[in-house]
Image (cartoon, rainbow, N blue to C red; front, side, top):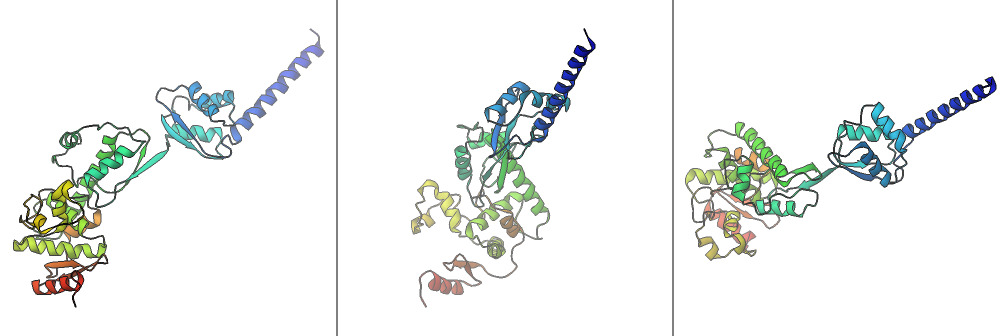
Length: 332
């Protein structure tokens, strides 16, 4: 073989190598997600070839060979975590691999508002398409055992908040997070409670907080309302709070309470039964829990709605009846 032929071959290899290097650099540096975000669902056990195919199926400007070489040379190939990923415009191949390795999966959100009941939580979970539904017909007692709870009635034991989760997280795992957070918040507030309260346990504080939560949405009023109920407990008076009656009525409640309802004995009818009801009646937030454990130290024993979301507080029955005439019966 002549020197000219050998020189030509070497030049060709050199040119090919240079072209390959430049092509690799472009494949690594240029964005592969162009006009809009795309979503990639990496399942457990997916090979690098399968992941690459999924990226191609989304019409990303990706070069499969260079992407695989990058994954192997950066030692990322065996560190990719399963999950659903959101890829935003402007990302290049190394940035996508970094997301896969770090496990920065797409997050979904579900919100449990303050004052919701447990049945409201279950309905929200059942309607959420991104959770894995495992509860089916599981009764509440069995669920609480699965959560490791020492209370079998689920009402009020889940903290109202917005929870972020990955696709296909189980409903039980989500409930466990809300249950654990309520335990943590309740314990923190209990340790810092006011002295000489007629509450024997954090659970009793939770019950009172749930009543306060349902009585008012005005944060500033919650310690005042808690103070009324604390003084009533201390004096052995009936709490006489409508939200507990409504809870005890269950599905029979149609939006109105009658005199017969107030006289009908249920464990939750605080117009008939002294003391706190047996369980919470809703999910209280931290403000309501704090109020229950730091009640106002005034002397009011009654309150009535003004009709605008706030309440009029009174220390005597005479003053209370006068307030009822003004705000409820519209008498001057």
